[in-house]
Structures are given as structure tokens and as C-alpha cells.
Amino acid sequence: MHKLARLDHAHVWHPFTQMRDWLRREPIIITAGQGAVLRDVRGREFLDANSSIWTNLHGHNHPKLNAALKRQLGKIAHSSALGFANEPASLLAAKLVGMAKGESRMANHDTARAAADSQFAIRSSQLSKVFFSDDGSTAMEVALKLAYEFTRRTRGPKAKPRFLSLAGAYHGDTVGAVSLGHIDLFHQAYGGLLFKTDQVMSPYCYRCPFNRAQPERADAREYRKCNWECVDKVEAKCAAARKRGNDYAAFVFEPLMQGAAGMIPQPAGWLKRVTDIARGHGALLVADEVMTGFGRTGGAGEKVGKRESERGAPARQPTFPPAHFLTGSSAAGVQPDFLALAKGLTGGYLPMAATLTTQAVFDAFLGDYEEFKTFFHGHSYTGNQLGAAAALASLDLLAGRASIAARARLEKDLRCELKSLWSLPNVGDVRRVGLVAGVELVRAWRTREPFDLRERAGIRVCEAMARRGVLTRPIGNVVVLMPPYCTTTAQVRRMVEALREAGEEVLGGR
Ligand SMILES: *Cc1c(COP(=O)(O)O)cnc(C)c1O
Image (cartoon, rainbow, N blue to C red; front, side, top):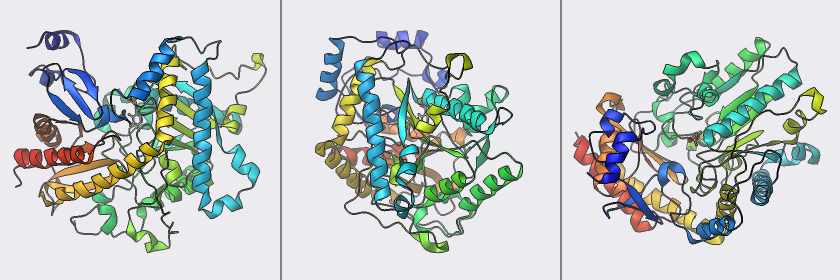
């Protein structure tokens, strides 16, 4: 065993990992990366098929990001945001606000609502303030605390702010973020530490109890037969809260695709409808775009879910050419009150996060010092210069023609290549939003019968993929493909091929 592997085995406790399994075999020790390729200590090469747990955007060892970091290193690595401002954090905050503005302009362009809203209403609801933190969990923690306190300040100190989030949701693993989540496997153990939140069904078409369609060899959103009961459920939850005299303080969601819940995509139009309902019942909207942000949701012109008009839903015409939104909420035409950004913020280089919010929320924390309305929250590395410098360079790349073209090509490649997986009897659902795909493995596609988690089907398939030089991590029985934007057509093909072969090898196609 390599010396570094021995040290790891002796001392490192890995996240979300059964360490008994881990200690059974020699770990892959990554020493270098270039584009979508990772190299290990033994000189083997692997494709980074989940962008190093959904963080990397432009590929590893990117010359522009490297140069930006070197430039910043030549000045200073870190000084405190407690008491001081700094150059890259100020520039980044302005850039993120500009991004949010541009996004909402683009999103409103083709909705009637833009015309209905007065100029002032649009402006005051715009995201214009940025609170920095370190990762997705802390970005959600900020949104949660701000929404909680904003609600108490606007509804009165007796208010008991309550949150509504989606079934299966994952919003991070700090205690507040865990309270917003609903993954029993992760969260059960900490029940005693958590505060109560409500959950409502998410539009998991493939396993929806209201979907009367027989399984087909297609994305379940396309052939589902239902009456949008999932929308009714949100309406019923909000109405019940109102009846109790306690409207939800906030509705918390991942736009377009729930990530760690199992890559659960939303049928076109769903998010707009449920957020309109939640807002209509006084809830703030908290968009967790830790996974979906920075272009992951791809071209907005491509919307899946053809039975949109089944119950008279407003069919949003696809825009051509597809608009490449940087956030899922904008792509869905939704203007949140809080936008949590992390994973891809620095292009996958450094831990940094941002929570964007509105002037209205900001104003609720203004007062004379002795009123103690201050937002008493923050971390040692808040507004870190290196992270901000990387983020600025990453945002520049994202806005560039080359990145937009690369994203469009990657989206097309994924769409084409993923089709081949339908030939596997153990593939139940292949679902993709933009540049993110989840492949749900089942015992038999005709029945949708799931594998017992204890069989570790997803884990074993990913291990077999690693043996073929492709690295990703499953979520239960769902294998994730979320490559960096620089991934070539040939590399996408190899990723999908590895998944197909691994599925055949491990599950045997029975
Ligand atoms: C990963 C993730 C988080 C947590 O982010 P960390 O950086 O791991 O703390 C929160 N929300 C979503 C949607 C995520 O995908």
C-alpha cells in the first residue's frame, strides 16, 4: 500500500463514508488534474464524471483560474471581513448582484408578469445584498437565520416562523440546514438536535403515487399521467398553515432539479406554479442553488414535461436559441428572496459561498446600534480574498462565448449519449436537466422495483466504473453524471460507456 494511503487509513475520517468499507481497500490518491481528467499517485488517469462532487465547472488546473489565484496570492491571501472590506470580495458581491439582475431581466423578458410589476416592485424584490460564507451548508444557514429573523421582525416577536421544504430535500449538514432537509438516512440520528419543519411531496414523476402511466423507456416527466396533484399538495400545505394562523415564513427548494435527493427533476412549469402559491401565502422564497447554480441547468429553451397543459397550465414557450441562464430559478422564471450559492462559485477551486438577498430583508436589520438589530453571524474566513478572486475569474469564464458554447455542446452530448442507457433492463429512469443527469437503477424496469439499499447497487456500479477509469458517486441507487464544462464529446461517451458496462457487469442485466 502506498505510504500516503497508509497515513490516510491511519488518520483520516472521510465524509459520508462507512469507514469499515473504506479501510478494506487502498484508496485512490489524487495528485493532479487537467481538464476533466484526474491523475492518481500511481499515474493512473480517471475522468471526473461528477466534477469532484459537483464543484468543478471549467476543468482542473485551468490557466485563467490559476493566474487569478497567483495574482491574488501576490497581494494577500486573507484578511478579515470583520471590520474591513477587501478588493475581490467587494468586486465579487457587485458581480453576483449584477448576475442576479441580468438573470431576472432575462427571465422576465418573456413573462407577462414583468409588465404587470411596477418598476419599483421589480427593483425592491431584486437580489442586491450578498452575505459571504464558506460552503453550501453555511449559505443555507444564513438564508435560514435571515428568513427566520425577518419574519419575526415583520410579523411581530410572537411569530413562530415555520419552514416548508420538499420531501427528500438535502440542504447541507449543519444543524439548521439538516432541519430543512428530509433524508431520513442522514437525518434521523440527529432528530433530537433539530427544529421542526414541514415537508411537501416533490414532483418525483418516476415514483409518484399519482402517476398512472406504465413505465416507458423515456424520462418519466414526458409520459406521466397525472393531474398535477403535487401542485395541489403545496397549495393544501400553504392553506393549512394559513388556517392555523401561521403562514410559512419561507418555502425552501432547489430549482429545476433536486440534487442529493436523488437527482429529481421538476416537470416544466412546476416550480413557477408552486412558488406563486407559496408567495401568495406570504412565504419568502429560498432558492438553494448550491448544486444548480452557475450554468448547471443548461439551456432554458429545453423543457421536459410535455403534458404541461393537461390542466390548463400556462405553457411557457421555449425560447430559441436557448437562453443560458446561470441559475435554475431564473430559468424557471422565479425570483427568489434568497439565493444560496456555493459549490461552483469558485469554479471548484476553494470553499466559498454566498447568500444573496433583497434590500427589504437587509433593511429589517438596520437600526441604531443599541437596538441590537445586527445580524450576529459570520465566520473567520468570510469574504476570503483567494476564494473571491477565483470566483471572479470563474464568473468571467462563464460569461464568455467559449464557455457558453462548451455548455451547449456538453448538453447535446449528454442528451445523445445517455439514450444508449435505455437498453439496460436495470435502468429505470434516465433524467437530465441541462448538464446534470441521474440514472436510477432498478431491479426491473417494467415494474420500477427498486434495489434494497443494502444491496449497494449504486455503490457497486460506481466501483465498477472506477475500474474503467470513470469516477462518480451514487445517491442510493441513482448514478450521477455531472461532468465539468470542458468535457469533450469523446470523454462524455466514455463516461456513459463505463456506466453501461458497469451496469451490465454488476447487475447482469437480469
Ligand atoms: C452540496 C449541497 C449543499 C451543502 O453544501 P456543502 O458545501 O456540502 O456544505 C446544500 N444544498 C445543496 C442543494 C447541495 O447540493
